[in-house]
Length: 184
Image (cartoon, rainbow, N blue to C red; front, side):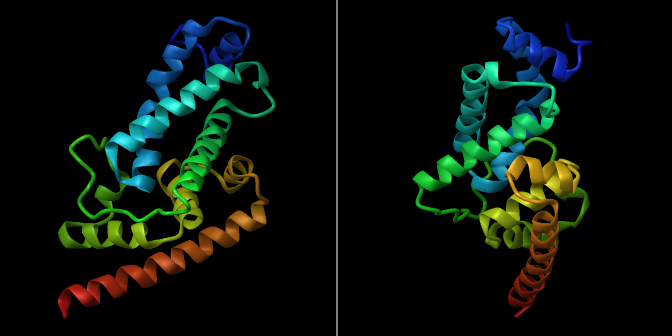
């Protein structure tokens, strides 16, 4: 079964072969965990949100069609789970510095900077608004195309381009501000 594509496996799950969801869980749990961890920075919350995504996949499996590739579909569900979670938190996305725990999987940011620069980059990312942080996570860490992000977030490609552009500008400004504050 592991040679089946994600779309084929999800179609089987949709048809009632729910044991195939385990294969999809193994393929996507780390991606989703990192996606949520970069937003909430609390390992326990990230794990809970991943579990919620798979609960919703099981609950809404009958709605899956091949019109949307599985990866976009699962990230659309993750986007909705995150929106629900943060809505319950009244939009509070404050990240606690150093609260990543030891459970972080491979972090693509590790190759971007060394030492204090990496810490500054993480702090700058944490200061971004949730919508800006999300588009950067999806585009830079999950290699999604703008058209895919648009489908995941329910916006237009143009809106995604603008959001990514503004997010990168904000990230750059915050990164340099944090670096200057550290030196002072």
